[in-house]
Image (cartoon, rainbow, N blue to C red; front, side):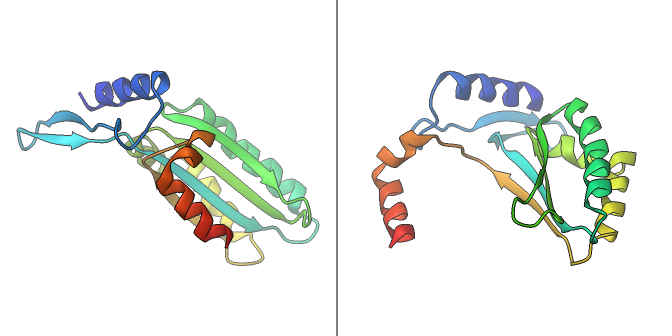
Length: 157
């Protein structure tokens, strides 16, 4: 039932711009408690930033790509990419986007995820690992929103 709600929300979001007034939670019946619980579609980003040892960046980049391939084929992963910083080729960034937090959680014990954790241990500096929960996405139309303009003004000034 929960998967249907997520699919319905994705269909809804794809055909109608998300605005605060149109964002509606979907409901599903939780079997364990037999009650209706609001379910709002959430995306999860996994972000990893690490600094490779001098001369080892190409090997680490190749290893990150080997972790990336199975992620892109996994159910629920909508995007995955590896980046190398332009000014410092030793700094690497790995990003995955998941449509469902539970799908990502199921990956935690997988071979590819263990390999990703092993790559973190090779970093020169302490790596950054972030799990970002995203509940809304907006395009440029967001700047037409009066609330967004005040936030933008505060950020710029």
